[in-house]
Length: 268
Ligand code: DGL
Image (cartoon, rainbow, N blue to C red; front, side):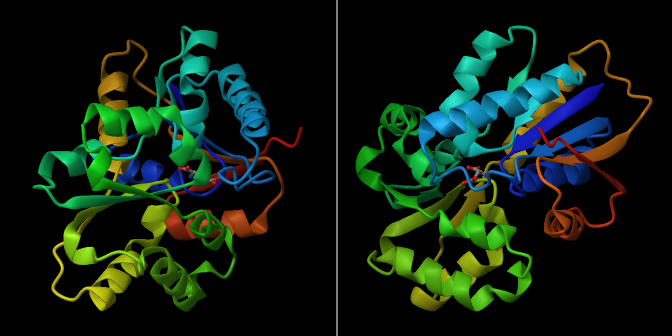
């Protein structure tokens, strides 16, 4: 079975990593990253919708099913449209793990870091409304983290990343908060930096940082287990990019560790 993963860039690898390492995903995997157009979150929504449609068509055309939209931005903009367009494809989306936080926040407040597009979409606003936590949630656009993640020099940017994070949360009294939800698949790459910053600003805090990778991976494995063609004979990981990017290749090896990766391109 060919399983597709899609993100604007490296972020979806945090989901793929979780699925492989902790949920034993073992299939023919095609991870498509729109490296030519990343980041999505700060671009025009109509333009981004077109890019998503074009990239998903590629995964469908090479026979991927299911397809994980390992990107909150793409999920919030397009998953409903894609499900209608491709009725036979199983799409697994990504949405900020707000529910996980809401279930255990004990009247404290919740910060959601996401891209500007995700924060504006009805999908997230409706979820917050449905959980009836409108007054307890702060939605914060943290688009620059995507840029930091895609930078070749990312591992040496701790100081810049932490300064940026401080600028985002310095106006809040963190003692009032119980959770920081990472509503973009790039953000778990900065888990440590986020922890450092909250520890510095608010020592002895009990703030939990949550992301959706585990939930998405479990959902994927559950869906695969219900399909007939579940036995792959050709287990492999294909990393497909929309530009030739040595930086992406290097960073994806760093993130996925010792997995054997095959690099391919979708240049049109
Ligand atoms: N990883 C993405 C997300 O989850 C996309 C970020 C971007 O391209 O701005 O939203």
